[in-house]
Amino acid sequence: MKSVRAWLEARTGLGGLARRLLLDPLPGGVSWRRCWAAALVFTFLVQVVTGFFLLTGYSASTQTAWESVFHLQFQTPGGWLLRGLHVVAAQAFVVLLGLHLLQVVIQRAYLAPRELNLLLLLALLPLAIAQSVTGWLLPFDQKGFWAARVPLNLLGIVPVLGPTLQQVLLGGAEVGHHTLTRFLALHATVLPLTIGGLLAALCLLPWWTANPAASANDPPGRGGRWWPDQVLRDAVVCLAVLVTILFFVLRLRRAGEPDAFPELLAPADPTEPYSAARPEWFMLFLFQFLKYFRAGTEVWGAVIIPTLILAVIAAMPWVGRWRFGARFNTAFISAVALGALVLGGLAVYKDRHNPEFQAAVRHAHEAGARARALAAGGVPAAGALELVRSDAWSQGPKLFARHCASCHRYDGHDGLGGQPADPPSASDLKGFASREWLAGLLDPTRVASPHYFGGTKFAEGRMVRFVQRDVAAFDAEQRAQLSKVIAAVSAEAELKSQAGADARDTALIAEGRDLIRTKAMKCTSCHQFRVPDEDAIAPDLTGYGSRAWLVDFISDPAHARFYGRRNDRMPRFGADAVLGEREIGLLADWLRGDWPEPLAVAGR
Image (cartoon, rainbow, N blue to C red; front, side, top):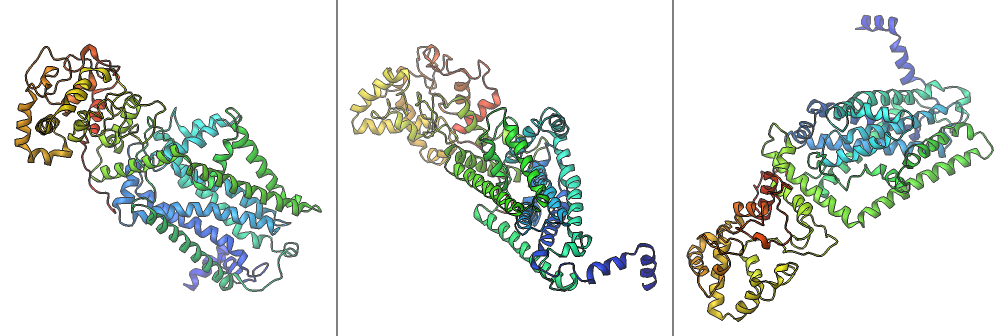
């Protein structure tokens, strides 16, 4: 071994270099303040190591990116911890860089010949942010997809090179396969190599600037060498950083459901905008800052002003030589830091007090949990997005909000928890065709309320008059018969939610079917029920509320089987090709509460 070491030393000189770095007196002495570089390098290495293992299971395409991240996080032992460490370490790296830059300026650790100390940190900061931004898109979920579009759009407004760079990153007209592969190339190779090189230069600066001029601005020398004196301090700081990262990973995971962190929302869907898309918390200040610029002037907030701020900071080593230069530098960097904190806090405050934002976040988390639960049962070749698009639980509320909520409500809202500006002008469809819903329809005090016919032209019709006049006068026996009729009509729907009650009440339901045709109930004077009736003028009660009945009704409410020419404003969604067969089926299934219960997500 000695001969091998001697041979290598003679040809490379690495042994002498290592001895100089490890055993020679450390320029400026041993200090806890020198641990900043070690903390940055350690946090960066956590990202590199965890990123490597994540990369071994990642597949960069629009049909496999989300699916591979799901597999890594929920079906790979320890995958959630691996991804959690990667996410938190990336955020910690940006925070440490910002704090170190602040410390360098305040303590004037940029004075000659250590100008490079500040310039290297200044170069690292936007690179670290770019490293984070390129990682947003890679899981290809709703949050990452829509959040990543913001910097891409901002890049397009950069003068001269912006549109070209935007097109290079996109790789097409929209975010797609090529965008993912290019973001991955930047995130996993170009940016880490660049950041690693700059960090190496930052660590070697004490030896490069080891001369009397550099030492003049250092605190009194404490003596000591890098090994073992400074290494011990660095190890303590790195351990503290690791414990802090682990604390936040575990804390954020416990703050919600077991699968709530690291966050993975529903697969990215370009046709479903995510109104609650936000950058990471450490970039919220810029998000808030851009709100103060009108359309067409965003380039000032996104490019020009930040560039000017960076230019002023880059000039601080020379400004600091002036009489009041150091005070100006400290005041300027403090004002920038305070402004970023205020803007970031303002963004958080406004989001917390914005009902629409909170509703969008809540819905996104629910949709994400549903998508993960569906994927736990297996992902088809078409990808997880096809699972979501074929799921009534996921698509029904969106279809209802888009096409039905202008007139109807669902439990008082638009299906997604929102409140339309206009009051309802048609019935509330929560629990449609259930016994409870029909009992309300036949309640004299409720039939003409906004919950049922109150907002329609039928508020003065025969059905309302019958309920308010005849049903209101029913005696106890007739009310008991009406309950049986309600059970019989509701049983036509074969609702999953009351399958047990229908199975238990078969005799009562059979009796109710006979009562439907009696003169006392008067149902068949307007409706047909299991017997064709050309004189019927109201919706057919045969199969009322069943999937087939509801699909046909949504497709063409003006059909003779339903309202015919008496139809009140309801669009013919199928007959006029407003919605396709699949969309109508999904809407019908959702209204009926008929969707599969998927497997529980692994790890829950």
